[in-house]
Length: 195
Image (cartoon, rainbow, N blue to C red; front, side, top):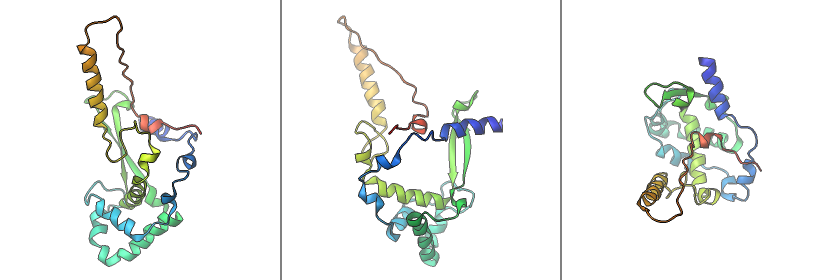
């Protein structure tokens, strides 16, 4: 069972190598500026103090409360990882826990993977996310309703409800309407763009 689950999720989360990230980020100058200490501090402040821990066992509150003691050394470490790409490979280790989506799951599609990363990894990721927030709306199509501040995924549900309501209200005419429901399960995990 372990091998089946491992193979399924490895296949699901492995890139086919068709994406060209450099093309997507082309011309976005603010992302290439060196990272500074204030960005690390801001990311650390924004993190939930006691959210799920990774293998290291340190919650974000550990770094938040001890900033006055080891803040400089911690900031130096993060800046070295962010600006030079250096750091221990153990920082990138992640445990994946699979939780059932339904009461009696019958196959692996019925499970939701949850990543348990180290707080160090989360801080690095948060710094990168904060840097990208300013340019996300120019990288993501205006019809995409998530990942960009000011856009809500719930807008999609409301729009679908309104369209179906309109379909039900229409009772006359020879022309009909068609609604197509697509299963977008794991769409964000598998979508890659060919350059």
